[in-house]
Amino acid sequence: MEILITNDDGWGAKGILTLVRILTQLGHVTVVAPDGPRSGMSNAITVNQPIYLRQLEDANWGTEEWHKNATVYTTNGTPSDCVKLAIDVICSGDSTKIDLLASGINHGSNAGINVIYSGTMGACFVGAEHGIPSIGYSIDDHSPDADFSHMERYILELTRHLIEQKMPYGVCYNINAPVGALEGVKWTRQCRGYWTKEMIESTDEQGNPCYRLGGEFVNIEPDAVETDHWAMNNHYLSVHPCTIDQTAYEEI
Image (cartoon, rainbow, N blue to C red):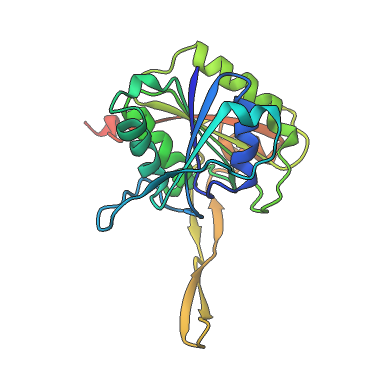
C-alpha cells in the first residue's frame, strides 16, 4: 500500500511523527508536509509565489526500523499544496498511485465548525476531490508534546476498516479524539455552533496595537448525542464523514 501523509503543523511535529510510525505498519509512507505551522489554512493554495519541494534525506526522526519505510519531503506551501505536489510531481499526475491520504495527527480539535478552517482537513478535501481515500486525525490538545497513546490502536483499526469499506467519491473522514482514556468510537455528524469573542486586543513587538485570534466556541445543540462535540465531551473517539459537495440539497 502506498500512503501519503501530510499535516498543517509542519513536518517536525510530534503528531505527524506518530502517524507515520503507526501507518508504516500498513505500507510505504511518503510524507509531504509544510516546513512550518500552517494551521487555519483550510483549502488555501499558493498562487502568488513559487512553491518549493525538497526531499529530506535525514528527517532526524530517529533510527527506528519503521523510519526506513518512509520517504519525507517538505515544502513552503500549504497542506492543500502538499497533496497537489504529491499527485502532480511525485506521482507524475497519477492519483491512483496513492492508496490512502492520511492527514495529522493535528495538535488541536477539528470537530464542529473547525472542520472548515482546518488545514488538516483541507488536505483531505483535496484528496477526496481526486478520488483518494482520505482521513484526517486530530486530538483536542494543542500541546507540542501531546499524548496520542490512547488513540493509536484506534487509528490503525479505523484506517484499515475505512479502506476496506471503500469510500465513495468525494467523501473523507474527520476523526477527533479527546484527551485521556476512550470509552470507544462513535460515528457522528458535525456539531452546530460558532466562535465568538475571537479578536483579542494585543500589541506587537514594537508596542503597536493589534489583534490576535482567540475566542470561545458556542455549542448551540449541547444535548445532541449524535454530534462530534458530544462524543468527545463524553470520552469517545468521533468519526465524522465529510463531503466536498457543499450543495444544500434541501433548498433545491
